[in-house]
Image (cartoon, rainbow, N blue to C red):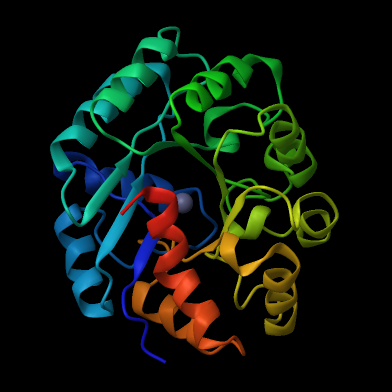
Amino acid sequence: MKASRIIDIHTHAFPDFLAKRAIEQLEAMSYGEKAHLDGTISDLLRSMDKAGIEVAVICSIATAPKQVRNITEWSRQVASERIIPFPSIHPDYADFSEEIAQIKDLGMKGIKMHPQYQGFKIDEDRVMPIYEALAAHDLILTLHAGFDISFPTDPSASPDKTARVIERFPDLRIVACHFGGWRQWEEVKRYLAGKNLYFETSYTIGDLPDEKVVELIKLHGDDKILFGTDSPWKDQAKSIEEINSLPLSDETKEKVFHRNAERLLGL
Ligand SMILES: [Zn+2]
């Protein structure tokens, strides 16, 4: 099946001057993972053209508080019809409230946070005021979820923690990457399947047997699954083939490839 439109909810790119160094550093800590692209937006757009992806969300991660402002500013510069930037709030960024208001004013749709790279647990008290401000501004929160290739046993982003946030902030729109919890699949089933949040598809097919992926989609509901690749860490064209190879209806695939994202992002 060829989807009528494809939106990639989870990609990464960096300012041109910094892309090479960022990719090298990330590769060095990722146990042999190699980037498929050079980390620039122009290379991402080339990959999108090749794969037939119309729109990509770029998820930035502020690994230190001082990066927050620069990332918002860069996000403002690179936003376009095809590129939807999600800037980032660091849990120790003191002026998060003003920054979140600014991000909303700039017309951005959401932000990305990554527990392992930013040193916090999804459900810890320190980040609750950030979640509250995001919900108040109706901004989407994309969270890395589950273990991470670079932190293979760190439980900071475990599904039970995400479940507590959902209970506390029922209005906060959450996208949990990697089907809600990379390599914590049993906990995903126990704590998150069917709940009020979106799952994103990257790093799952091939890691989890196809029948388990299909089971999770059915358990969770195909209205809450979003196609994402984690490019440049996965190849976008190949990621599309992987979804297409699953025994899912064309209707479900259209939802996953674009309809759910259109609704979430207001496109
Ligand atoms: Zn990612």
